[in-house]
Image (cartoon, rainbow, N blue to C red; front, side, top):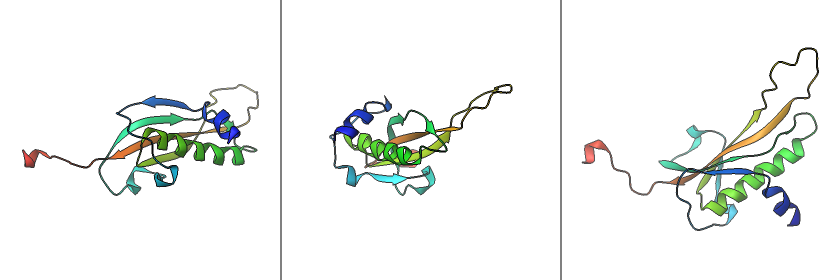
Length: 120
């Protein structure tokens, strides 16, 4: 529990919509793309982790994904779309730089009532 508390503070979170009452993290669905979602939704938060080594950080990457789900649950999200992206190292003329990855996620809330232009 203490490990989760320390590492969770390292996630960057940007609120992009209203947050709701926290929920159990087991209730937060995990998706790897927007196309996997089955209902209309809106984004309520963007979450990004610090970067980790692509070669040695796989275990830490999995923990960061779990922490992302926990943070989404704290926002009251119904789901979270998680992706792992590579850090752009830029030009490093003759200098080797170890590849790094980070977790990027969008916490979503399902829309309960959708109106369309035809419904007006």
